[in-house]
Image (cartoon, rainbow, N blue to C red; front, side, top):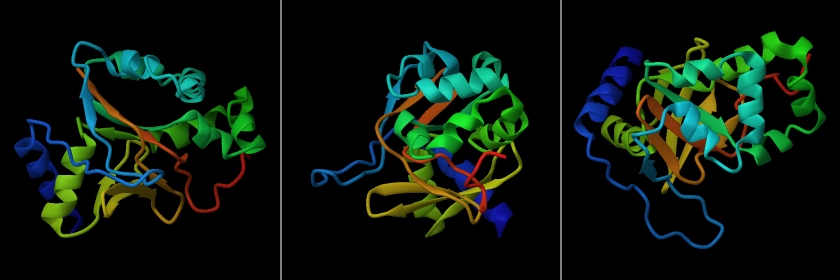
Length: 193
């Protein structure tokens, strides 16, 4: 079954090269499936650097020494918690950026990276083609599940946190930045250790 989901997602991704907006008009305050802005001349690292509300994530990627990965030739999809997502963690979020928490931070961030170039539109199309949620394996070897609730695209990490895709995703020349409203943590991951 998992193999089928991965094949369905890959097939939809290949067929959906011309990006089609999955957004519809939404009432004020209602989240909707993100659309993607094409910034094909930028690397993933540069695209993330151009985002105003991603300072904490940029700092976390630098601390974890993963930032260089975003400027390399391989293609990744970064599930990018925005600054308010980190603020929701409170003191635990601040502690996560401490040097002694580097192994925990690295593991957490690897579960926010997917191999390949996946836009919210291609993910939504894969969900539609599959008739329901699709599961993908992260670089941290965790599993994230994408689902749709109306026009809203959500992602959850195993039995852990669930996030909503918010704002505009950015397609760079080596991947996609998909903004999230929540940091994805595994079940029981409510504190820095």
